[in-house]
Length: 150
Image (cartoon, rainbow, N blue to C red):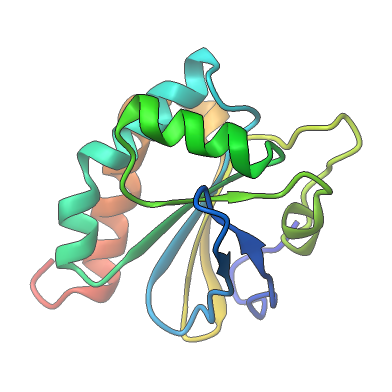
């Protein structure tokens, strides 16, 4: 798994609208991996990032959710939950593997990466905490790191 200080991987995937997204990770970016759309903890986490999305955007921080679900499932999930950030479809696990995550079970572990300046800045294991509140923790840390006066 990528650790802080590692170069950001070059990745490309389709979002829930079928548009190809290729983040460059120069600007502050949160990439959170989750096991599956429409499951309990994943839904809580997705809602949590959505609830804090205005604060992330105010700080110039882009948020991406990634799972091994396909574009159609992500579209349904984003619509059902009112998600206004990109969910990247990674059905073959290419994006997850670029971040060093295991995809052998057809899903990824829950993991969050903060990237900026072309490198990994921090890594979170949300499984060690409640998914509800995880986005706020990431936002707080990212604000302190990237926003003057955080």
